[in-house]
Length: 437
Image (cartoon, rainbow, N blue to C red; front, side, top):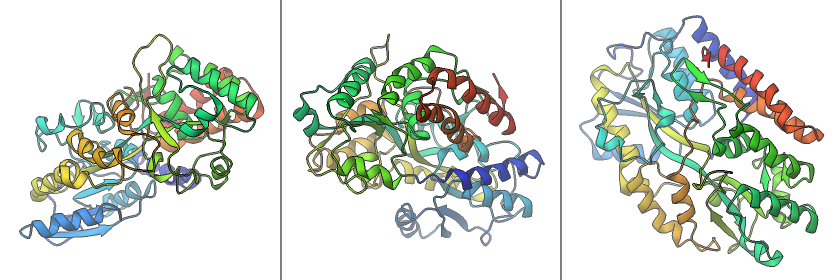
């Protein structure tokens, strides 16, 4: 799960961009003498969730001298800390976990000089074992700079009890989704079929449609074009739903969103895989035996279901690790690909074999109205290409709310708002050091 603090994140990212622009980043190399630990000590930064696994690895490898440090999952924390290490030329972690994988675009940037390419450190057969497309956010200019720990493909979550009570069918296409949403809003006022705030709108709807809002061509070039049909069709889908309040602009992580669940008003909710365990029961208070998952609906002219992405994590190895590089890579490989370890983690593993093992328990979870794994597996294997890790992640979200969501709240024209969103995205990308194509 991610808790996004847009205001503080924007400030943090602005500071990091300033460091990049002023040339205060690292050199992209180093012999490891600037490590934050003693000579030969593997310095590892992980969050609380990953710490037990790191400790397990440390215990199983007594020949590897390690120092484990717990870091918060806050967006912007890692880039800020590593920018300070760049200034002092010391203190770089040899391995770091990113709770916000988009930050790989900052850490792999040449001026920042932190992330080491993993292509020669992790064999191709191992990298090929990750879910197709899951390493796209780690890949820049043909080089792989991180390994994904978990992914957050989107599915169509729905309340099976309400569907049956109202006599509705689970939609297979977005046209059917729109029709069902409008019908529910008319027949059962207050019922919602989606949320369009921040990444829960931009990542879910525009991401699954393939709208190029952040298509990274390299570490220095990004493609943004919201005039394409892949973008305008999203606006056309959501326009009537927004006017009838069938989709809400309240963020799902906002405490106020819980009222929809408590009042039996969530009919459908296109959302990431982790919502199944971490939002519907604990946050939305939806009782056991009601929530089910279906693949994302198909867009016009397409027969395949495509998923958007909202969340996940990644591991990076430092370019400053020097003689510890092989040890760092071995740890990252184990943390992301060990099937028994990954099968016990809370969110959908990026490594295919681990995801299959992880799904065995999920299929038997009594909370769900039916086995969610078929839909989750379909989603994981159908990530829409073109959704890259970018250095303007915070602005990507805030600009969406300032334009598209603002238009939805005011009853404005959603198609018209795309032009304003594009202008803000292009400005943010250029500030982040990108050439926009």
